[in-house]
Image 1 (cartoon, helix red, strand yellow):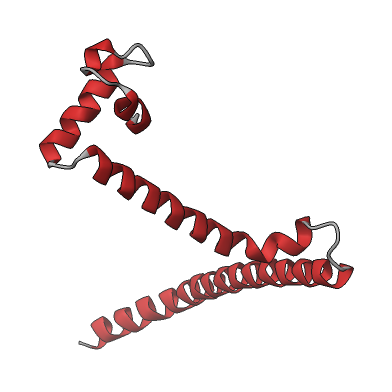
Image 2 (cartoon, helix red, strand yellow):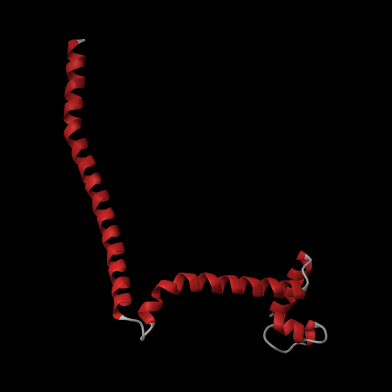
Length: 125
């Protein structure tokens, strides 16, 4: 949109590319914010560069898997790491379920005892 707006010499009504309504509403939004087209373009480029850097940093560990020339040790290390992560998640869920089952079993076991002790106290009084 910014490219279309910058390339248009006259008013936006003369622009034949794409939807004029979207361009006009975008320009009104920029005018309401008090942001020039050049400033908006600079901010967009800066955000795009920031996003690219973040993506590169996140995809760096997978470079060994995709690269054909990388040694098999690197690929094996990545596979071991993913297996460790999956095992960790699996064990975490299993421990959570076990704690839940244990708590339910304790609740079932302690419930009759509590009611008996309550009746015993009521009978004494």
